[in-house]
Length: 99
Image (cartoon, rainbow, N blue to C red; front, side, top):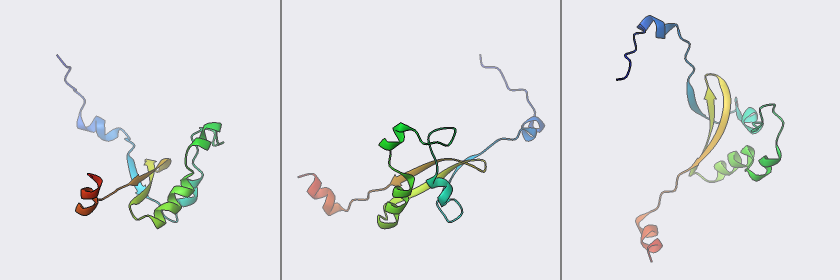
């Protein structure tokens, strides 16, 4: 049987829980997002040449309205970048795609 958590509400209130959240790219974070690297020491790695540069993805999103670049934060610390592309097809496009 699973153990019942006997910790009180006061215990949980004392814990400082960090929050992961997603935020849009704006003038306050654009340069920091563009400088993100996969390496902990902040120096780009050889493997990064196989990934699209964040700056290119942000620029593409300005011309392709179906793209949404976002910054990922852990509490107030920038930890990542993602770019979501949403493709909405009309009925006519779906009809031709099935042919």
